Amino acid sequence: MFFPISNSHINPLYLVVVGFVIGILGGFFGVGGSFIAGPALRLMGVDWNYAVGTDLAHIVGKSIVAARKHRTLGNVDLKLGLIMAVGTIAGAEGGAQLIQALKRAGNVNTVVSWVAIVVYVGISVFMLWESHKTLKLHKGRSRPTAKAAESKADHSAFGPVTKKIQGMKISPMINLPTSGIRISLWIILAVAVVGGFFSGFLGGGAGYIRMPSMVYVLGVPTHLAVGTDLFEIIISASYGTFTHAIKGNVDILIALVMHTGAVIGAQIGVVATQYFAGPKIRLAFVPLPLIGAAIVIYTLVTGHKF
Amino acid sequence: MKQDAAKSLRAFAAELGVYAVLVTGYFFLVLHVLGNWLYRLETQHRLLYAFVAVLLIAGQAVVLDALTTVLFRLVRGRSK
Image (cartoon, rainbow over all chains, first blue to last red; front, side):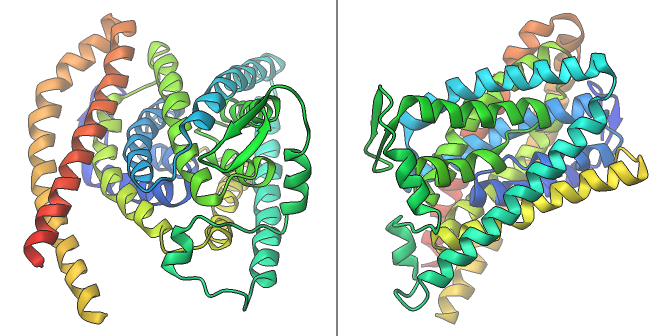
């Protein structure tokens, strides 16, 4: 099938399958899946600028479906999501500006690649350690059942540090009854700005940073972090789609086709979260950033841009 | 338990079948009707294209989500 906007020929079935896989990942982990979608579009010969912009448009659609489903399950903290959206957009602009500065310096590819490898591997190693430790600590105390997972009760080996962060009384303090926490507005904004910065710097929705940050820094239960992250991605990715579309980087026809597969995948992913306790979702999340790191290492070693 | 799993798998397969037919029809209807118009919009009116792009993907998300939810209900209801 010919897509005139990006001037590329792609089998629509391929796009639907890619969308389906990313939909499952997004619904289950609350991530955009840009580390798969970008290279998948590049494989079909779509230029990088279109791959990045089109992926963002597809993320908007997929996140709407997954966030709506999560909302019916009580997994979305709207207040937290709206506050974070402000910080994310500001951070994304900062990340994009740094990219422009590195472009002018002429070493953007090397710097971004190394930062991506360090960030992806760092997140994976930390989450592997934490979820493994948490599961070990709570082994035998309670049997994980679908009912237990539904209660959203969450445990983390990083809990004492999270409690200290929540204890910082930097005015104004914000009550988040849905997430069951009270925390400084500045800490929420700091987490959002960091997530947004990496979104602008490394591309995609940066759910691989925001979801763990919400759990470990803010102390949001994992199920709520996944749902709220998706809600927040709708706002930040819509903004990203709009700015990329103005710059001529979005082939909306490709995004619409990919999204038809993502609708089914996202529903399956969301329902699956109900059968896993928080630490198990976090443990299953570990390979995702590693896949991203492997792709970046491959492009560094071979010089191949997918 | 196994019977329940087989039932929901059958329901899901049926839903996928109906969904595939609908999506194929959608490809021909929407992409062929909108394709040229969107291409012209992208080349001539970038700002309007940006608005339309966000609206289209958001609109499709809401419509397809509602459609799959109805399909889930219909298929599951009949399998019971």
